[in-house]
Length: 88
Image (cartoon, rainbow, N blue to C red):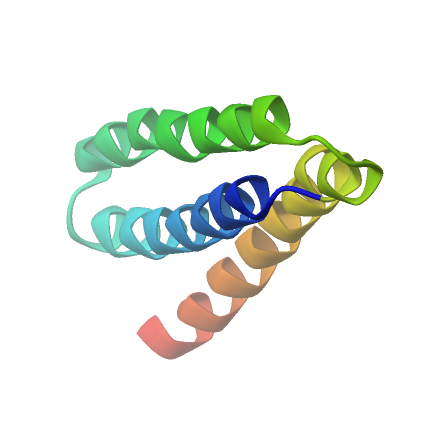
């Protein structure tokens, strides 16, 4: 088990959540600025790839390959839903 891989996985999830919040706020202010946020989603994907490359054990690989994308999808759903209610 490689702690570096777990750290990169955690960073990828946190960065993804922060970018999703930014995208929702950018969408509220100006629609074309959302393109910047969508392009910024490259960085969490790169961090996830680094975490997968650094993974040495089975648990690391499962977390980096399956759990991080699942958390990203859940965070996307909860972020958009909670901010959509809050922004009204």
